[in-house]
Amino acid sequence: MAVLLVIEMKASGLKNGSIVDIDGAPHVVEQLTVQTPSARGGASFYKIRFRNVTTKQKVDRSFKGDDVLNEIQFEKREVQFSYQDGDRYVFMDLADYSEIALSETDIPEEKPYITEDLEGIQALVSDGRILGIQLPSAVDLKIAECEPSMRGASAQARTKPAIMQTGLVVQVPEYLAPGEVIRVDTRNGEFLGRA
Image 1 (cartoon, rainbow, N blue to C red):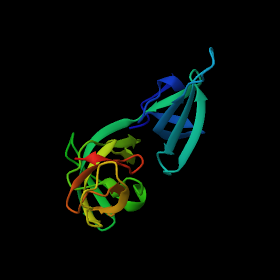
Image 2: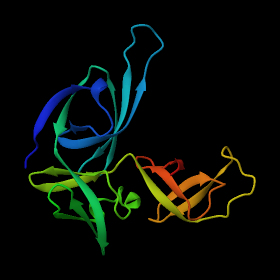
Image 3: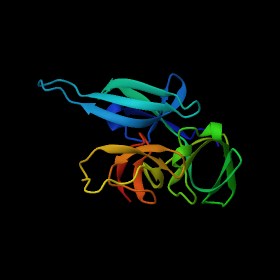
Image 4: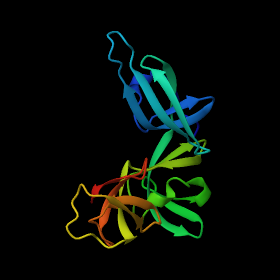
């Protein structure tokens, strides 16, 4: 199926997950920061980090609130991770139960967050071809390795690196130990809390 719809949208209307046309290529909004000037009548600026849907390259741009961008509507299919076969990641389309296989090279940024039976994943489809996947904004991962927890460490204490079950390294508070499940932000790899 081809791209469904292109809609003109103001920068102030964008949100995480929106897909817009930048220089002729689809880019997904990953991070959005609003800067409001202190002077009266000053226009708000929107600093946006985009990721190219096909090449996975990051692009940072700034816009005024009423700058117009072309939002692209792709067909989005809800999928669930099923299994890994060598360097192929196989997902199941939850609408028709068909399998969708993507190579490790198709999902280099998403790979460290994918666990068995992970739900909330959306496949972006254009012309019947899967362009990529969008993960939920946060996932639960189990700590596989880290230094022993510090006795008496508080929640405000220093952090330490921890290796997750997927190989992702996350800075976690000192009081956490291997085997604990934590919530991790998929946009920046930051610790959000215990799951």
